[in-house]
Image (tube, rainbow over all chains, first blue to last red; front, side, top):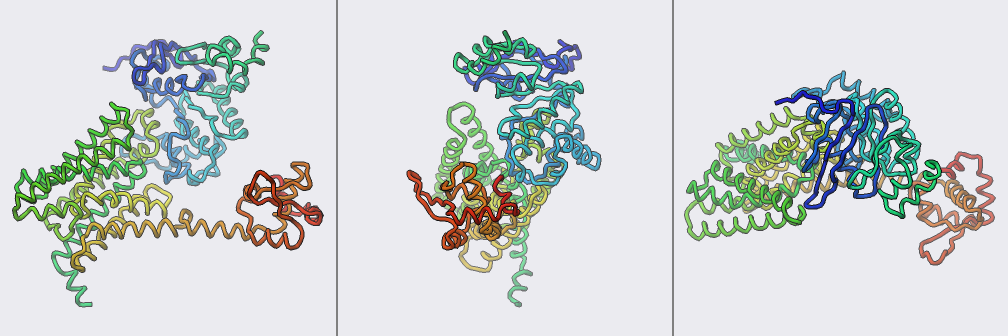
Length: 257
Length: 382
């Protein structure tokens, strides 16, 4: 059954004709999207634009009514271990009785396979991943006792521990303070510079230009995609956000012209 | 004393004790996962929906045969879960409404069947009533093998899929993205909860069964910070409640087992909610009181001075809530009163707000300034 024919292998993420509906309403309509490897890409768009849905459909968490998705040429089923996924922080109950290190080890469960428990090697890898996000001192801390920014970093460590070439993060900057945001961005840039592909659902337009080098602008349809320098324009922002919110784009308009 | 020894050597009491402890342990273990997955109320719907199945099993087998009763209970419970899933997916009703509808409809059908069987009479129809509120004394020695089997299967499954169950309970979306068969794992957990309910019906009955799922888990969560600890402790609390309830109802005439078991389990929950270290209410209150006692006069003055400087207003009226946030705890009334009586602060009103405000007096400002450079003044910046 396994089809080893690569389709668009030169793209880290290739999406074609993707349509997702909730009931009768299209949440994503006819998405054609290519994100090359080694970029740090922001997916932006107004509320309800389908940003999270796009990620979930790409990861196979939401079933599309049409279209297909490829990571480095392969369908998601063959790429599970090579994509680090950071869901929205509020999607889980942080009062769950477990420690930071334990959560990070969850990123290794897939590699462990059935019936095997994490051992010394996994503990060490989890600690190393926590150290990468500056959380090594909190390894044995209850996750309920961590601040929002620390919880977010634990989530990122869980994706890092897999050593995946592609990282997908859903609103990692939501509800974290400025210093945590700086830590996260520095880390993501470091990963990008090491050759990984980093895809981030982002909501803060003011930081798009300083954080990212690739941009996907979304509002049910694709409004624009490509290098930030070319896509972050007043016209595109107006098309995605409507007239009023495009006010944010005034400095960008100057920069672009 | 000899009466108690006699009691324990009695075959029936032994059976009842072992059975009740087993049922409590099984539902405690599986209840921990149900509570963490926020499926406690699904357990309630499943147990109520088991009643028509109990009656049907009784009708088909022509008597109170545990095997057919359990199969029937499991069948209607599963049907109820399916109907609920369909309602949530296909209609605009939310989970809680779907749960309420399914629970009451299935329970109503069960009651109708129960009364039909009772009017038909028959020697066994009395035994059926025990499924409403549970009757530990009705447990037979042969039933223990069924319960033990179910318990063993559940234990083996939990041990074998420990990390998968943990992952699915904590973050199902991540598990799915990692390629785990989340739907199958969740189905196994739900089916196990349904099994626990089915075997627990005899002890606690359909009406109160959900308490035996939730209460041990809720109590256990208070005392431990690891999933393993929670599951083990929850099973232990369930077993203790079951055994305790069975003993009480075996030694006291006319006490139904189910309610006693539930009362013991919820009693443990109450105690745990109050005194468990770290999470208990009394513990937290004590910790807050200790923290309040550490609030010195100087820190209050320094905080008020900090607010005044921040606002560039020597007479800045600081609201109690602001003091509380800056100090980390509510400033003790005694501290404020003593500062006021020493003429360092004065209580002021700040319309339209009706809450108490304080400002530093002249003496208070010089006192605060004199304290500056001392450790307390660092509070200003935090």
